Image (tube, rainbow, N blue to C red; front, side, top):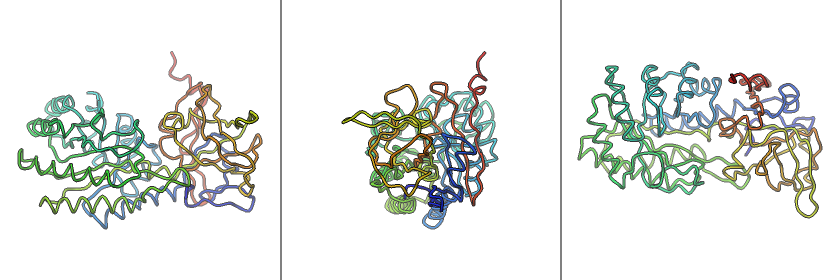
Length: 431
């Protein structure tokens, strides 16, 4: 359940994904290497798109690029019928250079600069999700100066706790994101945005967090936002043409994780939206959902080569690999857990409990603590599943490490979609 759907052990005892032997991939492209399975990627896209089309036809799934963005992946998302959720000018620029229709791009962010907003207006981005009063005024000024009326959604903070890590909990009262409903700021934002000649308020948005495995917080968020929408319709004439309860749904990282499937998520969200709209006698707006991690996470596998080890009798045995916090900082900052297999010896049995350490100069550079694995030797290959989201997008050049290569595998073919950085790349911006 943790590895991509095409994963299997081949006759050589090697892990194979997308018809490609990971030992061969390591030999051809080096390690650390991130391997994305195209079949899994497309299947996750279709799970959202097809279920939405059945249960709520006037809808759009937009992929949250912050999970990981690449031109090849952007093109796959577009082919599968998804739009894009971008949070920076860099992500917006990549989308535009990838051939993605910009009317299907939604621009988020809590502190968009005037330069970023100007780029969005010049490119013709589909929607701008406004996050604060400063942005209302700034965007209105820029739009009026260009003779435009820009379609926007207002990001609201519903005060809902999704029971996730504090660093990725974004819908509570104490959050840097959105207009608070409880304090009256959200109503003030509706009034100000409706009065702005350069803005066309088409809808409301909320995003309560990431890596969320419970459906109840989304149902609560939907009720709060749609009740607010009806209140704003009566008080200020707000017409709700689009509605987004966000995304951030969890994926399994270890065998004990059991988050809802994309189909279960969509069924729960659409059922609650339709019930609330019926209760409030509101017309059906276009429904926007924002899966990110749950699309790319299951499709990606990180591949490392084992190097040195350190055995502390009675305490712990460390086994080091050639990657770590520079390519996957999630364990260090979130306490994230992973599983692993020995990709070149899939049939070997577990013999010892070890801690998988990275190679970087931080004691916190630990990928996995206390995992039972076959006895490891230098040159073995470790494969970590569920590595497609928030590893590469948060990667760095810490210790001046070149960032990893990325390959896309399908039907026995491996396509390099991002080359490994060179040492010259590390110096290219120095003056």
